[in-house]
Length: 265
Length: 254
Image 1 (tube, rainbow over the protein chains, first blue to last red):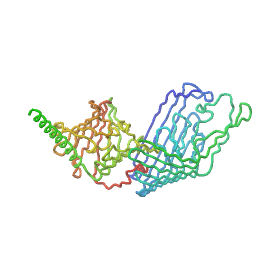
Image 2: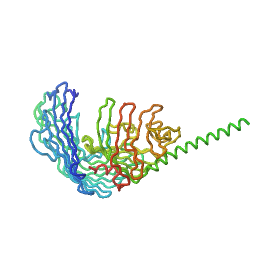
Image 3: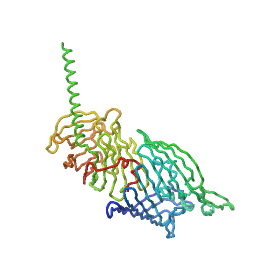
Image 4: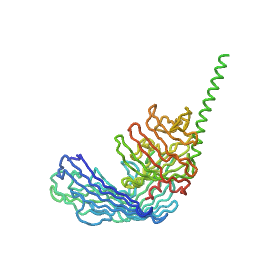
């Protein structure tokens, strides 16, 4: 197994505009990456991967209370981490990256100390650089472990409070799992010689709920959170059907947890 | 007799140095008083010029509510596209270092800037995070070092040192304040005895009764790079709401 990245190059063409006055703004970019690996892996002979991403985001502010945000990603690659079907994905439940994806589409209502966001959005409870155990509503795309990105979720989020104390309530009607490395690619690190058949994933239905109180003090921030939903990182159920042959199925564990954090000084 | 005379002389010197320190403090306080406004808004155009003369351009919008001691400010990048929407909230306090949070819209994350990170560069410019906070007069000790002319204008040269308990990357700073309008026109910041950053303020204009420097040039002498910040469309006493200067509000701006 080799996990070392030989080299990566990228080319970015970015643009941004505040078209037609201050109420509408847009931004986006085209990015191409090349990743090279010095060695092959037992389950992955690819040593050179090319990727391309086009991202476009637009924001519209209707008035002082309402604003809208939308964004779309279009992707292609040489390593079949991106689905070849030209379909637009909303829920991000595919095992591969969709070729077209709604990155975010939401409406925000703000009035005094209340902010209400409805639709596909990014929700970050974690504030640390690396380890964020309370980041319950932030699934990620780990297909390429060296470069992982966050996935938006469909949710209703209400935040109430000022600078020092905020209460955050989140209800997500549709669960969005993290995307983990494909079984036939190097990051899975499977033993050679075992024939695996991946069954359709068993992702749960039902909604997720979370609440968080965050306090900003003079020298530190504290938060207390509660989450009732599913762990967004899939696990694998493994069943040997014959010697050296097995069925593998992704599944999600439910969790209800309370956490207290002191994110930073 | 000799001892008595020595003690008298020592007392007089102490009183004189205390009066000079008080003068320096009063000059800085007067400078800050003359710059007071309920709020300030400007559009900043930045040119970052690296040691090998490579130029990168950025733009931000700055909103500030309040003045020295209890102000809040949001700096939000508007160009280029890679950083558009990135914002910094600075909440200044009269008795301690500011609190700062950075909002990165691409990953939907707000992050508190820890004290130990305040000396790092702010998004590729030559300003550090600490340079973006206000220097309230109550958090420093001052000493009048003399008088010098900057660009032909007579100035007081004042040294400031952070008081005990005030966290700062700088051991001391020198500021040149013009005698005619009390505008600071140059800062030099030292770590121990080494000059690390110099800020020069030029193109001073009277905007709504407040003398305002419209061009700021920050030089990082360690990197040999500099950032030129031009203040455009400067306006004072623009109506602003306190609720728009919170971590929560950082997220909802476009």
